[in-house]
Image (cartoon, rainbow, N blue to C red; front, side, top):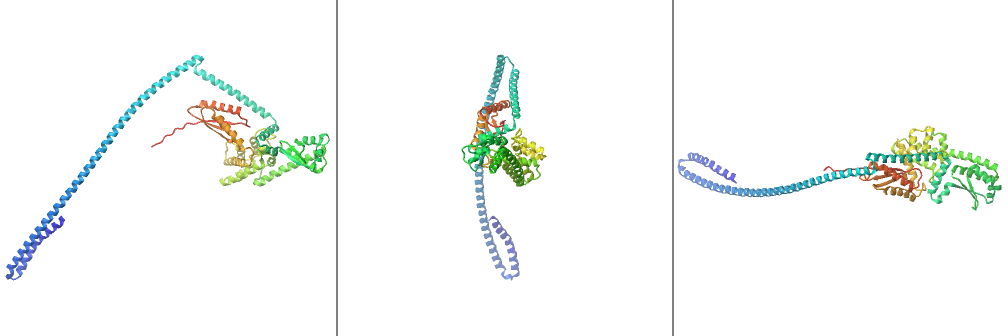
Length: 515
């Protein structure tokens, strides 16, 4: 608005002299007769213009004054608001300073308390150290031994006890190794029978031969029992002839001998001539037939799995596994299943399928001779594979499939997994779940009963128990004694085949967070 007024005034100021000049020139040109009237009109026009300019000037000045007053009021208002805001900020800063002062005082009080507590703890530590020294001196005075002498005495006692137990263990192992293989095999079978359900025992220890009539029982027995004695002597199998109609039961722990006796007896029944000479002939034929059957079964297993180039003796041993059972599971069928599973797993992982199948098929080869030779089926299997020039991968797979040795290849890990899958398949083995879980629970309960044990875990089907201890209660030296005490209590309270490994684990963890 002010600029408009100024522009109007300037225009008028400029317009006045211009108008005067124009008027003078116009008057000069006009006739002199009209000069007087023109001058009067010009003076009127000038006066009117001056009046108008004066009025515009006053209006402009008034508007400028109003605008300045309004601007001043706005500025005063803004200044007041800023002063109020500054005052509020000053109050907040003052409050924060007061809070900081209070916190500082609180921290100083806490530091003073902590210093006092630290001083008190130091004094208590000094008193405890003095009391401990006095206790040790008193114990040394009462016992007549220094602390070093007492430690040496205890270590000597423990060492002697360990030596004695080691000697006893070595002697037991030597005596066990000197036993006959057949006796050892029978003990294993008896243990398996005891752990199986009663209605399945007959399936693993006996065979039934059907008779055309009951008169055949008398012919089998013979005059004064000579025929039945001859059969039992040649085959090593017991014949049970009871009131069961038209049936004879063959009882024996060796499945091959039982199969020979069954075939021989069936041939004798078909022939009809039963006397010692004929019995001997038929038993010899039955043995040859079983040997041929063993070879055929081994070759059939190789064809089924798709493995070639195995030594003929190993093929025969594979065939013998048809007459070998483990917890009611046929050993040959189990080996074939493990081989197929290993091959499938190897194909999924991009490994050598043939090697995996070969290792899976031969992983339990030791079970075919564990009745005749001393040692576990793992040791026997490793010896057989080395004897017949199997690869190092296959030997390691045989040796590590029960976790006795660390696997050195992925194929060995696959065989171990396939063996567990085949054995754990529902219905594969006859050991009841209740018996299995009871044994595991008993192991864990024995371990948890000791002081300082946090928790324990029975693993590897009860062949190992891992004990987690509280690090504040059990030190490294106590772990040795704890492991011995747990193993002793397991020996006293449980019955189990083989041995159970006790692992005591002590672990300390410290956790902090970076903020």
